[in-house]
Image 1: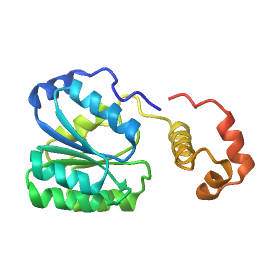
Image 2: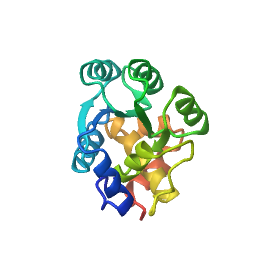
Image 3: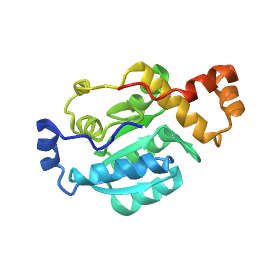
Image 4: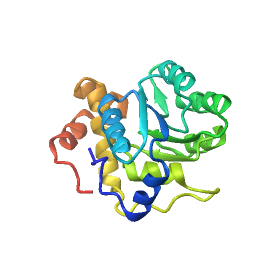
Length: 194
């Protein structure tokens, strides 16, 4: 998986000064990614409260009144898009970034229509998340300096589904709609370079 806590550039360092202690709600059911992103955002000045479900995220939103939120699209108990709508009802000035491992144009449009300021594919770098949260106006933040290659994104997605299927090759192949032997060849290779 890519490193979430990469070196901060000058713009992000400046942005971190602007958010010192700002309350951020992080809602993601992927525990390792959630912990890693939480640590990275805390190092950059946010006061992060993490939740693993839609229900827990709503409870935390009532309790802490966050300034920012980072929400996964697919949660075990519901849709991140529903959570975005509820967060904006509770806190109209909140800035929300949607994360997903299942990116496509339709869900990106739905996330932005629901009120998210941007939509990032997992695994998202903490600096990219901060740039999206702090961007002003309707324009998108600049593209990342060193984005993952398409091969790496594909490999990351296959690895994630494989883990979600308890490392069962047949089940993973069925869910990815690919031949089992093809999947085994991919799993036996090293991760593509960034």
